[in-house]
Length: 310
Image 1 (cartoon, rainbow, N blue to C red):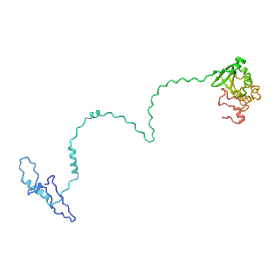
Image 2: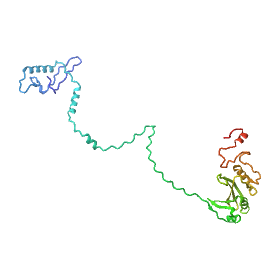
Image 3: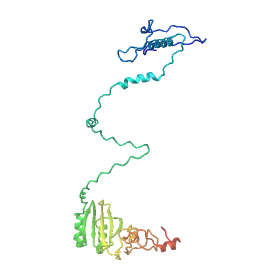
């Protein structure tokens, strides 16, 4: 019988099929005349039968004989089992209590939100509650008209008295407000006595809720004094004014425009007719009671041959 832990050599056949007769190295413990056999597992002190020893020795001799077959190679799984044995035999370390481990670890900080995939819009952040709106600061006061004190105003007031209703300056612009009954006389005085030799413009403003609905504005300029003055007067709807063509010839076209856009007539004008819209047009577009999309459908149909020009 082979003793565990002994070293043996295998017999390998050559190309002729013969097994070379080589001696097998026998460990030191097996040298001698008597074969070595394992001690019987009988109880201590019990005699061992002579037959068992002899039989075991013969069996061991037969296994080690040169003419006997080669021993079977052990299965490759045996070393793996042997290698795993030490790890299984190793005692496990002390196990820490789960509660103590959990209590010892500090709370992990919250992880940032995962970045959105390519092409995806990030989710909008939660809107913060709006702060209470602060009270708006009071708007600064705009410019206001200031009294206009000058030698011109003194002369006019001394001559026309209460007919000069107002003399003011507003952001550097000087103006007079006069009664409509004396407006022609004021214009004549400004042209000949005060040397305002150029009538720049004549226009009007419509205030439909006011009793005197129209402001008529004459813008005059003096080359001699290099000064500009506005002369204003107020009239009711349907009232006429005297033409200023006799004072400034340029008033001809300026008064025609006022008539065309507002419907105000100037007595004594040499050719008072429309200047922007065609003759026969109904209505005056710059009056506040004239709708912005209104047009003379009758004139459009007769003169253009269509139902509407819009």
